[in-house]
Amino acid sequence: MLVAGNWKMHGSQAMVRGLLPGLASELGTGVDVVVCPPFPYLSLAVLCLRGSPVSVGAQDVHEGSAGAHTGEVSTAMLLDVGCEWVIVGHSERRAGNAEDDLRVAAKAHAALAAGLRPIVCVGETEEQRRAGRTFEVVAAQLAAVLERAGRELARGIVVAYEPVWAIGTGLTASPGEAQDVHRRLREQLETFAPGAGAGLRILYGGSVKAANAGALFAMPDIDGGLVGGASLDAGEFAAICRAAEGTSWKT
Image (cartoon, rainbow, N blue to C red):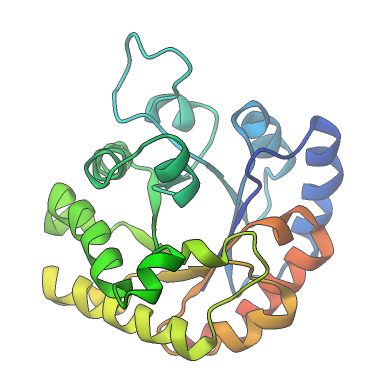
């Protein structure tokens, strides 16, 4: 099981120092935990978590190795400050930064090639959901990443299913609805790279809270969560991690 906390554009040095050491002390060893603060706080997060079981990830990365890309951050830079993970293709970047499937695939490939573990986000809008296009949309988003990465590198990805209509809205897909999408994504992964589907982790994201985490994580194809707002509260995030730890027997 894996639980990743996406802080989005929240945080401060005081928050990093106040939240992370306490969080690390509350966690057991039965679940992998990642925190993804904004770029300015990555080094401090790595320092605060040194020697703990919690890893640090970034919220985005550029696909290029270096060059004239003002405002961007490379895989080498993330590795240099101690990151092990990176989120790519979050719906907020797809919508707000015009990142299409090919750009997301390029970022995932760059991360994999550099030795970072990408958490690849896929998800449908409310309009697409109402039109019955949920799996058509998420399958196309995932297929672009798989085809760019190739069969061997693709084994290193983590997929996060985040229905866009559930992000930051308080709405959540029911455990059964989420499980259906996760099952079909796993089948897609297995078809692409036979033997890999069972070992790849698929997270659920979209208003994950301590109150609903246990029911979501109990589903056979949900391997943890990508947590937004709840990751900014040490107690709430730790409770979500404990819910994952309680179902870690699945993986």
